[in-house]
Picture (tube, rainbow, N blue to C red):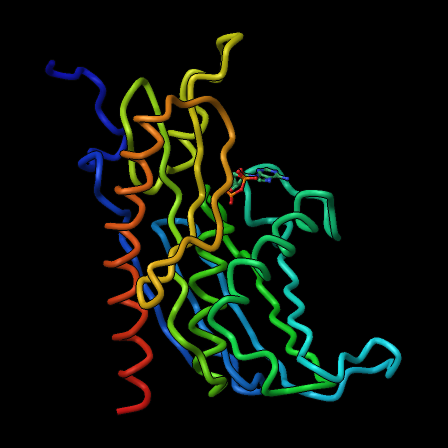
Length: 236
Ligand code: ADP
């Protein structure tokens, strides 16, 4: 059946926004990167592995991966209250879990690896932009990794499965009593064929979820290529 829904920015349903990726943007960090999905821009800086202080928090078997996600106050149209929130705590936690499968944390006992993710402009999918930037920053820091983590938000808007939701799309039909959109951020590791993050805000049928996951994997393969290219450019 032909659909009447059109994306506000005229993209195809499976099309990403303009993606940009760059590494080595923060000289004092051990590794750093920028990742952009359209108007969502994330910076990531990695410090470590370095000795974890206080010592009683050290793990003699592995490094501690600490992710810190934050948005600057003017990254959104209405000024965001500065400082941590329940949302930033949750995103920091799921980001660590999304990145852990590619890191060999047991190679660096008693240490900490800090990953600071700063969203300097937000237009939805910032946790995914942050994961993409962080994954590149970890590689830029020279850490041994079994693959790069790539993330994208897929979802259901007006009955259609879309790739890389913008804020306009996330908010589609928001005035109605029933929320019409379903937002599904997914992180995928092509090298391991493993999904390391899947969150779901909204409702979706099992068949549609399958379709959304396939769309996310396809988009993540493209993102992975862009991340890899950016990493090679500086090292060439
Ligand atoms: P994600 O950015 O990963 O999609 P959310 O679904 O929580 O995470 O947020 C969706 C979008 O809502 C953000 O990308 C941003 O554009 C907007 N947003 C989030 N928090 C705020 C806030 N405190 N004030 C204004 N807009 C916000």
